[in-house]
Length: 212
Picture 1: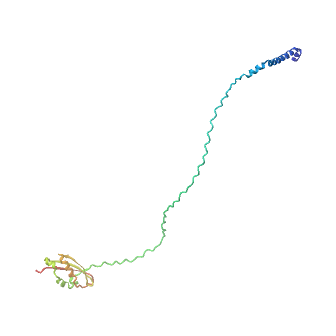
Picture 2: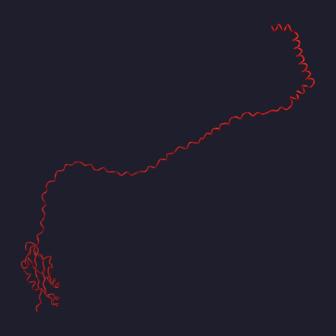
Picture 3: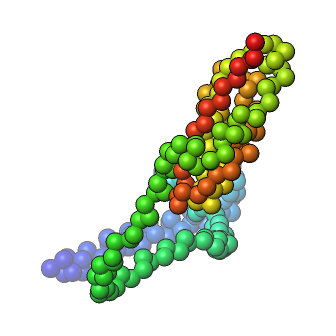
């Protein structure tokens, strides 16, 4: 329907075509008269440019710490063996083994014969054991020291006569003065005694008196 209306109004088409042609003419004229130059000058004017800062990026996370340096592994421990110490272990001697030994009971021994102690010499009178004793005593010399000091006194001498009649162990058992002791002992050694079948003990008295 619109197409039909357009076909009915051909003048409108002519007006539009003329407008277009006019625009082209104006443009060409402008170019020729320097309008184009002004446009170029306008273009040549410095352009104000604004630098729009880009938004700052968020702060970067701190870099991770560097890995620790790889240390060389420590040298392996060298095992130094301790010197062997010889310890003297005391040798414990095992106790001797005890073996049961059957032993016969000791036979009864006859009692040992103990020797009887020797019998003490039996006292015997000097006249029996030594018959010459009285004669020898009568002939005894008076000690000179006793005569000089006019001393008188007596002694008792004891001695043993063995089985053979020998005189031994003569000693003074009683004395009134030491000056008479030596003479009395010397006189006993002059006795002639007779054995009595055993050892006998004899005592003989000596009496010293001055003749006045």
